[in-house]
Image 1 (cartoon, helix red, strand yellow):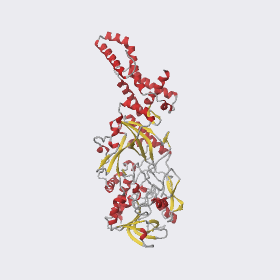
Image 2 (spheres, one colour):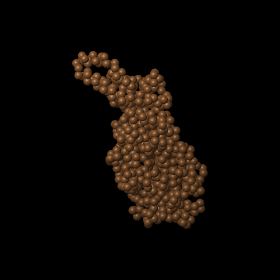
Image 3 (cartoon, chains in turn red, cyan):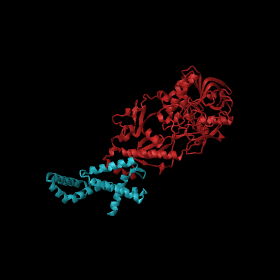
Image 4 (cartoon, chains in turn brown, yellow):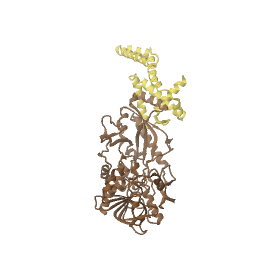
Length: 489
Length: 144
């Protein structure tokens, strides 16, 4: 059932088997996966059914001391969480994203891609994607050809696109459910865990500045989002020092640096106008679509120490006047008519490496429930930016060598140096998964080190983020967590 | 007689060449040798003009050229490459037609990209051969 937390009487104590804090994609998926077990489950959502922007701003205000970042607008405080702002891109991580690389400190997941693969298939079902096909060749056909790069040094990575709002899709399931209670406008302010204990006993939930209720449960799962998970835990240490003594909470904040409007790509030949690069392959009457993006092969990335990056062809653009000489030259050299030329805008989405200086901490100012606001210090190293540029240059070379097109740098780079950087509102790594508590916050089962009954779900557990939108991986990891909880609860 | 470089005259050039070759093949080797000795200079002229005409079509975008800061040595190297491609084409014998020279340019461009010989011109990743064509045209214009 979906309940209004404000209607719960002040001082009430409720008991559940499982308490999930947060109703984003992770929280919703976990509750639905656990519903089949004979367990009483509650979800605590800080916001209401619909987002009230004024309230979101009030609670999500923060201080940004790093690269430009909109802390408020990249999060959502309502039922469905940040899925209400999701662009709908679904992509798996690449197997090598989860492997250890000797040139990337703290790289490597404690679990393998192979282990995660079956959960990706289940995640497809949850999102409502009827196919699970990531081989680009399988999506080709008439008018849906792929560009052929010589030497196999540039690959295509398949992305699914589905316009989905979790709250809308699953609202009825929760309204009908007898085992799951969703409490709206219920903000967890205190996690009751004695300093020397390994067990969380309860959480205190504020429904207003004066009214609270308590939830006791056998197990708690923090699923508030990549930034909030860290903020909630750090805030507990402010209440009682040493409650969660792990030093890595909030550190290693990772984004997917986006180089928006950074490159134009001139493509020539018949295949430049393939529908795969325009609308993509439309499935189930436009319910979802599949698009291929360019990616430098893992072999080259390993050899040249390039980050993983995808090059997304966004839309065609009209050539600027200054392009005419180059266009004229290409037309004469490659004897291609106007129809077989296409100039497109490219968005690059790159991998960022773990960096302890890129982090979330707390400010001295507090919201109306007494939780300190967060301070974000998102950092990228010069080396990362330079390598991203070099990787793009490599794509430019491959386009030329394969006689497929040319690349043009636009705004973001100036002689290889970064001028501006965008982001994908993907908050990763702040409660990272690792083999030991010295390098992370949760173990390979997403259980918090040193606490027996607290797990963390969501993108904050990603030790590294590859270059894929995180939602599908969040779902896969959450289903995996549900499997683990089914065993231990 | 070979005249200017516009499209219609290409036909007469090709015709001239075909006649020459047909004559050479159809006659004795001595005759051919004499013919080639007499007309050799004209054929060279033609071949030279042929590749020149292709090059001239790429234009001389001064704003692009000015946007790149290259040393004189670098510029000369690029121009020399174009000249050597021209020579290669001229001495090719069989590759009389425009297509042959364009192919030669394309091969050189592919090699440039493979070997990382790239110039960034107003943001465009171009091969040195491509940029060299612009430089070559500028040089020829300047020399009149």
